[in-house]
Image (tube, rainbow, N blue to C red):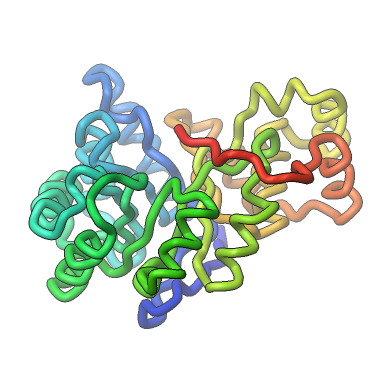
Amino acid sequence: MKIDTVTLRNSGDIRMPKIGIGTWHMGEQMQTAETEISALRHACDLGFTHFDTAEMYADGGSEDILGRAMAGQDRGRLFITSKVYPWNAARNDMITACERSLDRLQTDYVDLYLLHWPGSVPFDETLEGARALLDQSKIRAFGVSNFDTRGIQQLIGEGLADLVTVNQVMHNIPNRGVELDLFPLMAEHGIAAVAYSPLEVGPTRAIPGMQDLAREEGLSVAQLILAWHMSRGLAAPIPKSSRIEHLNDLAAAAQTQLSSTTLERIDSLAPAPDRPVPLEIR
């Protein structure tokens, strides 16, 4: 499977695959660990190389699962993202948190390290931690998550956005508010978008006409949604699944380009809002 990449700004030609696999809720139960590890290895076999995790997920358990799954893989072909808690975002705390994540992930570095959501630690202190981790080659790029339009505008206005390569936010067919103002602002300044919770299959299936459209395209609703993301290229989706058959379906959908007519039909069934809405956060 061939996956396109986006070059992260101010990063020295670091390329992020335009689709990844999420790991939220993995590592929460011991009895499902082997199933989750097998699924992640299968995803790698399919050609997925971008994996997303966080120290918050299962209190580090997700990172542990991912580290075990990727052991023995060619680290150079992987793109691993993790995230730091906002209360660990001061310089020294951030370095310590990152080192704990690296231990769980069984790697010397992560490709992308995100501030999980805005917190009370001044952002310039977080940048000190990010610069130190970059200098120590423990991270290759830094970014943020769950920053809304006002938050990104503030970073830009205060001259604090130069190291910010990515903003990861929720984006899916029922929740398209970020397309109105946040994504255009990010694109203007070269900040790449990553979409978590990209599928929302249940709510999307409930939209009148969506199941019929998927059927006409010969796709499941989940495949239609993922193809919608990939065809538009606004954000790199990071769907999560620990089921082999679902991963196979996602791999097929990742290679599917929807026609302009189909994209227009989705717009008519589930249009983006015409006025700003608060950023959805999970």
